[in-house]
Length: 196
Image (tube, rainbow, N blue to C red; front, top):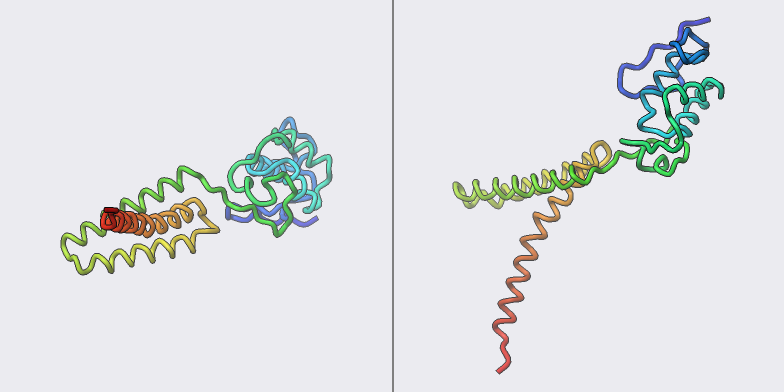
């Protein structure tokens, strides 16, 4: 019998790398390899029991071992997954496949915080630069908008809350002044055309 493969050092654990043979288990989980139990405990708050069961079955673990590990970790179908597993196919409780990666969750408060920080920080920077060098303020505004767009494009997959906040911030930074100009223009036009 060969030694089980070493566990990856990053945060993601591949269930196919868990040992299949039964090792001495902690009290209360007879017949469950500690690596399987650790895997279920580690990801039980992110994924439903059916999702974990699917991954462990694909890795070659038997049903009795999987069910014992799920019971021991307290993972049930009723438990709503948190974090990344709330989105994508996993959000509706469908098993995730080996190549199906759940999408990150968008946190509304984070989106709002990034939006407000982008707007306040951007307008404050433009105002400060405008008081010192008015000709450079337009260039700074352009740089801030491009930086917001680059941040939105590059963070959509890894940090969707921040990306959404930046995207909405860019839209608001362009849209609010445009709306204000259109409203003022409309008021001027409406004020100039008076019925006599």
